[in-house]
Image (cartoon, rainbow, N blue to C red; front, side, top):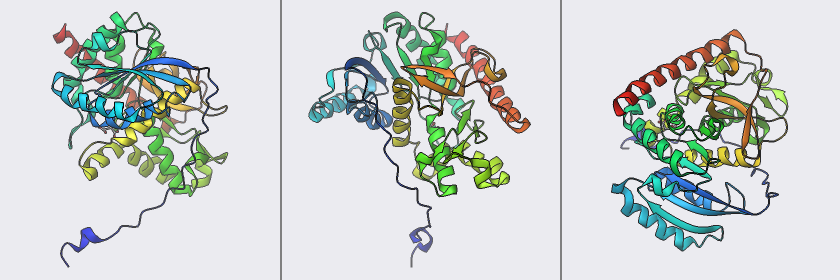
Length: 357
Ligand code: LMR
């Protein structure tokens, strides 16, 4: 038989059914103007339907959609808009698209920054700094000029933390609490791995933390995590797995997807964007926290101003960093490593910035 190896079906552990999250549609009906950048790209193509069908801000929230992409992608974007018309989404009040952030960001309540050059096989995310840093420099200025001062920003394009830092730096009239970057994909990956390992439903796993950078130095921490209210460390009872294999699996999952699928993650990223925005907007459940990259206020010894993934609780489109979690020496060292990488990225970004000014 030809190429027998590739015909073998590997035994894959099964994830218990994902129970849909309880949907909180209690909020009064309102309208949000939401801009998606990189809207003609693959993540945009997966995320925009979630945004328009109510999966993100609920079925009581109307959407005024703004779609931004580079001039070379405008034809594709036009096609996306045709499809959006054909969906006849009841929640979508209006759709505008274009290549000028100063037009697309006008009056926005939310901007999701997906647009950027994607990582290819063999590249580290920070190698994208030079290519993508310039985009965030310009878009920060545009945001500062034309968006609402209450605009909420989520940066997805890599290196997400440092792109978010650049964006925030150029939009000084907008509160720094309004800038976040995506580490929810890492959190979801970590939760799925723990659910697989413990044969639990993903909904039984809570409070896994992603500290630091959305990169291979991130620290997925289970020391405060529970499966059905029992400590993950007790249930798994295997520190070698939790301190080595588990951490490395989550840290390298983005690269694994690129290698196996031949392109970086798409719908899992779109799904994580939905989860991040939804929890920020509707709030986290009592006793639960989620991880978001936010501008550091110095918590846990991380230098102020770095965009760092922390455990947070959310309420009504605001968040609070969870305080007072105990950190053992292992965790302290892991947090130091990812902090160090973010400091280096910031310093590199400042050099690139100086050239752009
Ligand atoms: C991911 O984590 O899958 C994305 O950020 C893509 C990448 O570069 O890893």
